[in-house]
Image (cartoon, rainbow, N blue to C red; front, top):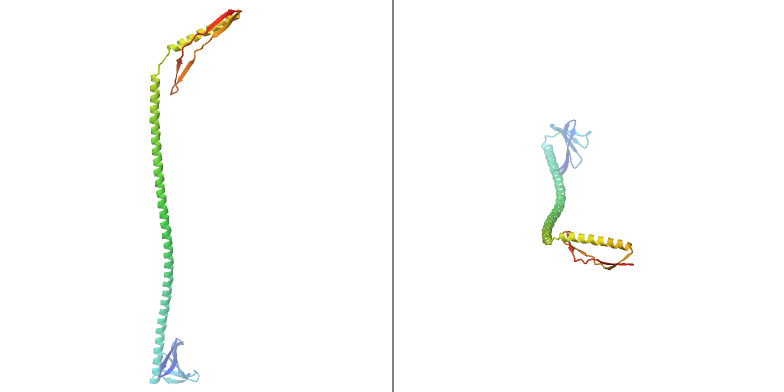
Length: 242
């Protein structure tokens, strides 16, 4: 460690070094002479080099005051070194704080971006939930409308079937006419066969007029039918010999 100091208007340079495991104080004046004295000793060396240096009593006031000023300068330099080290530590700490502040600002910006994305996702989720609720409401309304339509159709079909059944029940039932009609048709068939037999014997059969009975079928709702008989005019045949 080195230090500069002024004593009696002259500039001195001093240093504290380790020699043979003992600290030695060296003081150099503006003329180039060096005063060297080991810690705890009262005899020192004075000269421009160690070979031609002479021993002196450092307890004399002049040398003692110079040594005391040198020690004060070294102590002050030590304190300055401590202060400088502290200042360097503080500067490094401030730099670290600034770096941390920059990182904090960066993290805050990232958090702001994430918060914006989260808000956007929440809005989209709310919109999706609203759409799902609206869809469920529409489906429920459609299902209710379908059920009402099916119920109305069932009521109408029941009413229609009841009305058809009532109409069928109101229609007249004619059973004997059908039997008479079948008997008359059988008789006509027998007459035709007799006429053909006569024709084979040489008699020509001339059809004068044949009016057949027309059976009208009345269809009603429900798939049931009723046979309605119209008046029948008998077949007339005239036979003549060839």
